[in-house]
Length: 366
Image 1: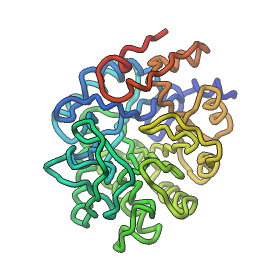
Image 2: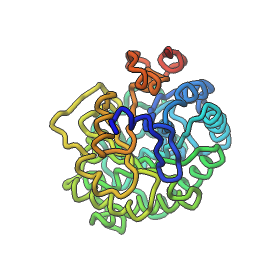
Image 3: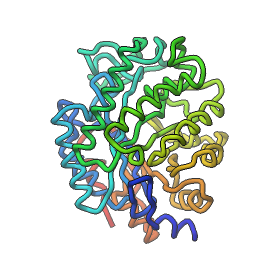
């Protein structure tokens, strides 16, 4: 079967049945309203894109201290959960499937975003390089985070469990645990950011411990075949790195094989667009070629794909589904456009973050 035909064949990711293999990638849009509640516009935005095989929600913080940017939604309060329920219902009404991406940013934050909780928390008290947006939407130097205690970690696991319970109450088809892009769980995995000397640091086995405990916490709510994981081997976004990424991420994959998850979702480092300008790194290793064979379950690949590249990766067996980000921002009916070979709308980077309808719900369909 050709990649073009495969793109439009159904696929099962664990217990989640997709009508096609196009996935709407998680896309931070920073349009939440007071209380970190998803905007009423989000219902329209996601429903417009329900012809995707699967929608992965924008990254959604599991707690107040898990927030890293102004205008990002949470999934820890009753009001947030009620808003998500309306969104998921609208997607389901149009025949779509949707999972919630559960997020804690760790050190990639600023205390102004969670004044009651104070400075950000992380595996170790190491400040990231650079600056970040505070609650005033202005740039501030990163603060040195507080190193998490085992008491903090126990609370974190409860926060993940509560967020999963809220996602289930909202009707999501599953959840994706965000363990990529230099955020908290990635900070525990990689040795540039994890310099602990307790049971959560040092050896690769110890650095993997928290990810396993988070999966087990979320699995108290959702069966493991409704839980996905996002990873970004070789990613450098948010000042993350590891001294031996192949050994580390092969160990991550081996650990994940034991859980029989819905899927693993890996970001290709050749396209590092998160939070900045488009940048394609042709020298970067191709993670799907390195790690796909080691993973025994279903695999989603993301990272700057166009239609032909997505079809090729499916045909080569390097992925079971392909995630599209910026193309989904500008093309609510991306699946129909791919199927018909229609021209694509261009995206407007200036409207990616913040704002209202413009660049969010006003892109035309065919």
